[in-house]
Image 1 (tube, rainbow, N blue to C red):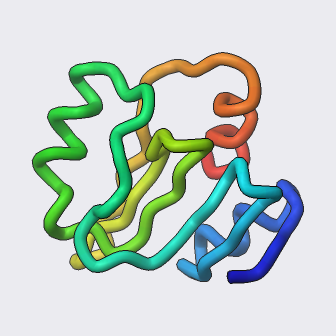
Image 2 (tube, rainbow, N blue to C red; image 1 turned 30 degrees about the horizontal axis):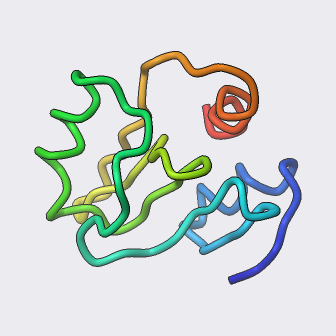
Amino acid sequence: MSKITLKDVPAKWRAREDFDCNGTLKGESVNGYLWGCGRLNPEELVKLERDKNNIVFVVHSYKTPIAWVLQDGTEYKVRQRFTGTTSRHAGRLY
């Protein structure tokens, strides 16, 4: 997995290339979602649960998934608001 800076995140997201941004923001290919739910609110948890078996790429800030891609190419970006670093991470994707 390549180490990158925040400015490189959008390109990695678009290309679906695995990345690690100082261990706090990561994107990786998966076969079904294997990570935890971090600090997702109940509404976003429902969406993660609905999609979990079809996720092929996920981006998480610390341990919270903030975006994922399904097998059919559909992108989902978490809509809940976060504080501090996670908001900055999400902003790089959105």
